[in-house]
Each structure stands twice: as C-alpha cells, then as structure tokens.
Length: 232
Image 1 (tube, rainbow, N blue to C red):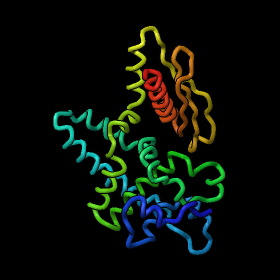
Image 2: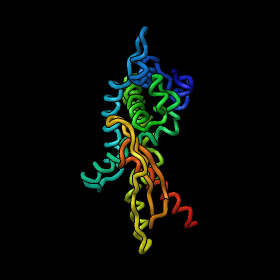
Image 3: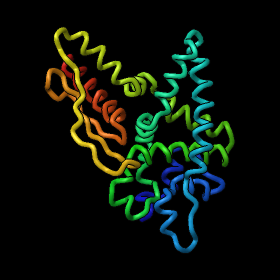
C-alpha cells in the first residue's frame, strides 16, 4: 500500500523541496514495503536513519550545550537522551502527521504500523538524514530546530513526565502513585504494551508503546494533563 498523502504535501509541511525526490521517498519507505516490490525494488530507510541519528545527536548536543552553560555533562546527556528517544521523536512527528506519508507493506499496514512509535521515530531520523544529504547541514539544522527543539517547555514535560508526575503526587499527602500493566502482546521483536497510571487505585492516565517504559511515560503525561486540569 502507498502512503495516504502525496509527498509534495510533506515537503510543504517541512518547508523544503527536495532536489532528489528519491531521497525523500527512501526516507519514508519501510522495509516491509521495499521487500514486497518484485519489480523496481525500492530502498528502505534504514541507512538514512543511521545517518539522521548522528546528525540529530550533534545538533541537539550543540543546542543543549549553549542553552545550558552551567549544566554538568551528566545532566546534559540525560536531557539529550530523553529528547531524542523513540516516544519523543514520535511525539514531535505529530505536527507533520508523518505516519500518513510512510510507505508500508500490506502486513505492516494491517497490524497498525502507521501509528507505531517505533516506525514513526525511525522515519523521523531517516528524514533528517535525507535532508542532510539533499540540502546540507543548515537544512537539517533548520528542520531539527523547528520540529524537535521548539516548544521545549511542553516537550520536556512529556519527555520527563514520570518524574514530573511523581513530584505532583508527592505534593498530595497520602496519595500513592503506581503503574499497572494492562496488556503485553506480540513477538519479542515487536512487543506492544498498555499501561495505566493510578493514584490510590484510580486510573488517571493511560499509555501504550513498544516498551513498558514508553507506555508508562505516555500514561504519566496523560495523568499530568488531567491533574493540571482538575486544579483549574
């Protein structure tokens, strides 16, 4: 199955027109789609993902280094890791509706691959790699600052949601926070977890992801939003 939206729309969203359209298409091509092509076999995004990961690490490191002149190395590393992890990149990709542009095989499409954080985050990195190759460092730099390093206050709340929620619960004397695993299914290489965050047994947030940690992070973020709304 092909992507839902034309690739020109994605170029419009990111504000960049590719000189080599093949690079953009490759960045959006999952291995399941590439493997189904018997004729005119397509390249998948995995090599571009490798490159994009390195470009993202450099640019995010430079950003954090200059933005936090007094922050020690350990905290910088932890913050960078939280900002470029799988759930964070998938969260950033929402503005682009990136899942709708991915080229998926029939099996992956049928099992919800278009909405899977693991795939969307990989494609986000592949897109960065493609931008770097097609337009150079400045083009990749602009994209990362616009879609990943912008609105950091809200994004950091999401990235570090478990810590923030724990602090909020600690300010509620006698309240006990816990995470309850609701469902774990799928093969080892493609697990899917569903988790609920509870306060004194009452569900205050739900989340899902390919790891228990990612699901807990999303549940915590939903719980934070709920608790903040209740305070208004």
